[in-house]
Image (cartoon, rainbow, N blue to C red; front, side, top):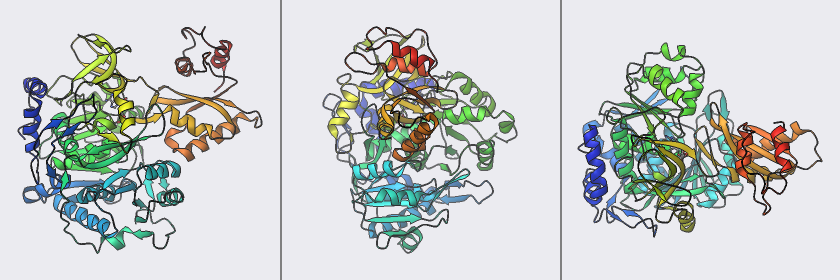
Length: 631
Ligand code: PRX
């Protein structure tokens, strides 16, 4: 592809051109995709009015780019390799032609189930090929997919379904995840008690669990899909038509339904993928993320297929049935490009090098990380032990809202530095600001990470709440997209993400809002008030620490803690369960009633000295109690 950057000099030129002549730069790149009708303009709108649009006037379908256009030359090339949970059960492979047929049949199944262009379809599934196929099937007919991670609770699922009024749900009877079987249909049944918009449920059979079917509402995938026609014309979509909604947590309120549109997302995903990973036609690429998160959307599903390469999908978990599983998958499928999260790297690093060393990993060419800051020790282990010092490591910084990678080295092309995401991709204009909003200039600086201009992949809105979109991302620094992350720039101009500066906790690469966890905890009848903060955790990056004021009717603290964990699991899901709970008699509040989270964060991190100025607290004595408290 002419836009693949091959040298540091080419990177510098591309970067300069992307800022000085953005229309020409992105216009040329976008033309290399397949359009039903080419776009009239490249970009319009800005971050002041928050009305960004890309490739307006264009008509396309993203699945024609991911599937149809490869059929002639690469129809027999493997598009998807499915590695099941059980190590010895059979791998499934799909060529581009086979995947195309499955997507068309599934699209026809959705159509005959009454799904129309613009309808929202919820996917609450385990990591099976039919999940990836469902995403593409929705896109084929112009339905908007919203995937809900299979680890979320019935309540979290119903909140999401109701927020965007999905008309149809696709789920599995159950999902395999390591030793566990997740009763997806049972959880969905619970959720659907409060989801009036859902008129049909399609169930893909995976675990053969005993489930109940509701007459007239529930249908088996295999009954509907096997008889569906194997050709389905791709719905003509405007560039700015929504492609998907994905819910993500922020500092305040409920998770937001982030909306991505068609053309800009496609171009950004495909462009960043090829350049960051430096793939070629023979690459076998494995992204270990779940499709329930944005990484699984952009870099497991869309970008690899649009680039016509093989994508590997893994149903299981890194340590099942043993801590060598990841490395065995790489060996088995001759994976050349591997993309995972620092949490997984840290967890596997702790299991010892022998698990890696006994696998034959010579196929590996590039290693990637995403989702949270990677510490130097984990980076070096990944590079030296997994990559045998031969594979560049790309540390890719981005977010659900950015659609694709924003800051990263390009594998083997631009410099790498342990724990640094390094340089912005073409089109990404970074500004670090201090808390007062002043731009920090030069090198050796640290501030809040903002982006100055739009790029094709940026989310366009929060579903049915554009004001919230504006408020969340564009009001802290007017005219700038504020990421919520802190960032350092070193003496050579390389960027390092230091973590969230807002009330978001990054647990094992999953974004969790402290307010969301507090709201869940507060529903527990024993709790009077709660405050939740993050603290450094060796494996997860950050853990969840909850300070609780409880009523005294239930005196057994262990009972209270158990009950809290249950409440959070019910309200959100096991991923939001606090790692530590401290029951306290009060919280450090200012006279105006505001909780001083800075103090709680320090105490949770085990830092009992240098708590800063506590004189403005209503009751400074409470700090002493918190410092001495038991967890
Ligand atoms: O704090 C940053 C962190 O993950 C957040 C975005 O989370 P989410 O929207 O769930 O998307 C995760 C996958 C793209 C960011 O605000 N983050 C992501 N990648 C990195 C990172 N922090 C440091 N280094 C990274 N490479």
